[in-house]
Length: 267
Image (tube, rainbow, N blue to C red):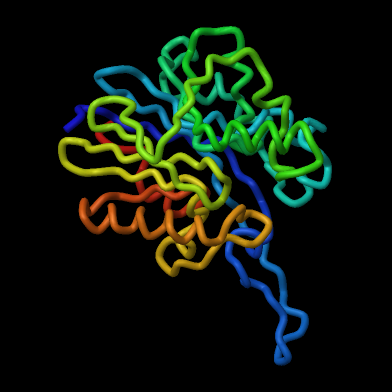
């Protein structure tokens, strides 16, 4: 098992309607035709995985200017990253005891604007940026045409970056550290399995925004779901891995669940 540590970095809070992340959460009915809408706070996070074979950064968070016009107004109105300005990647790494120069490689779970906003820090460097083939294709398709998804901003990832493209459903990044292709939220979501000396950690990423997506198998809202069928298949694979390994599962944006891990593993 890998003698690795996982440091979780709180990268701020996005406030949004619960209906975006839990399908049917506030749907009307004959009994209640005008249900109340509940606004929830969702965590944005990164992780630093200190592994004997390298120091890996998982995701880069939102751009610090998200609320200052960098994100398009309609997107920011729907997903308000209320404290993005306080969560510059370099500053958040510094608070955790790391420097940008310490990062040997970056793993992008996917390239949505709340995950890829710090990639500019690695432009014109030799730092490898791992991303799934299907994600890279869909991100450029979305950002450079009127098709696809509006949650991709070319300004986040259209840099001189050293892309390391993952082509298959599983990819060994390092000893006991495996990337997992979990399509559904987007075509190329990456999760991970990390086998530590005393436990296994599964990173579900945005396959599951919150516990209701994982435990109750309630899909994400339609606006956040590229493919319902792929999402369900990815979820069953993830849950099978969890059953066989008794792993801790880290979701994409559930603040209470995120905080239950008290900053990471083996720290």
